[in-house]
Amino acid sequence: MEESEGGPIAEDVRRRILSMLAQGTLRPGSRLGTEREMADRFEVSRSTLRSALLPLSRAGVLERRTGRNGGTFVRADVVERNAAELAGLPARLRSGGHTSATRVLATDRRPATPAEAAALEIEDRCEVFAIRRLRYADGVPLSVDFSCFVADHVIDLLEQPLGGSLYELFAVRYGLVPATSSETIEVVSASPREADWLGIAHRRPLVAITRVTRDAADRPFEYAYDLFRADRVRLTATTSTVTARERRGTDGRVERSVSSA
Image 1 (cartoon, rainbow, N blue to C red):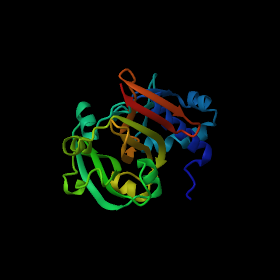
Image 2 (image 1 turned 135 degrees about the vertical axis):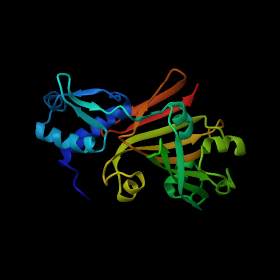
Image 3 (image 1 turned 90 degrees about the vertical axis):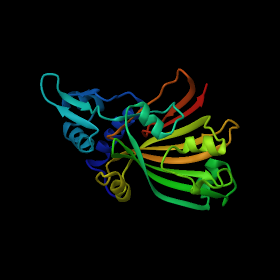
Image 4 (image 1 turned 180 degrees about the vertical axis):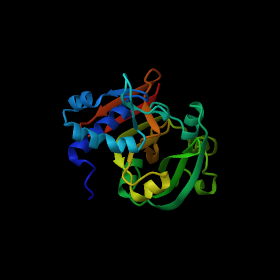
């Protein structure tokens, strides 16, 4: 295993900052403070802080500004993703004024893995459709999405156009409408293959979202794992029109269960 840049203490500071972004504590344009203020805040030395911030600056998550009110800031040119909205990515991007595009990387029909079977509440080795897609916002890679569906629920899925919103396809063709979803959010490092797809350097931070989506009958129909570039996404949650339950861990993970009102 490769040692994280700056050592474990710097890695912990990076994860804390990215967790604050995922939870909405830090927003695009937010000022984290001067080097001295941040070192005091995270209770680390300035050299450790610099080691923690450097990869985030290289990844475009943070930026330094000079001047009287300077310091380290969260970059503002990111895509907002509301965790409380049960909508496909193209619809989310359109609502935010962004263009969207999709490239299908791989499709497969195969027996479910134990993890997939448990998430979809099916018998081991039942067949599933697996789809991996690269998503673009404004012509720039935004995320790599892996989705898994019970084959018996969407029998001819791989014969359908897969470049748009799968939720819209499911609603029109199969009568499957998402009613609730449970998401686990964490920060991971890009593998060489993921970095190549997303056009970033190996081990840059990614926001990983594991999701199980259910229909109105409370039947799981999607098990997904999405990897977003941390420099291009901001996670938010609006709870005025949904019921949401959230659990935060000390390791930077945020698990959020969202249901329609």
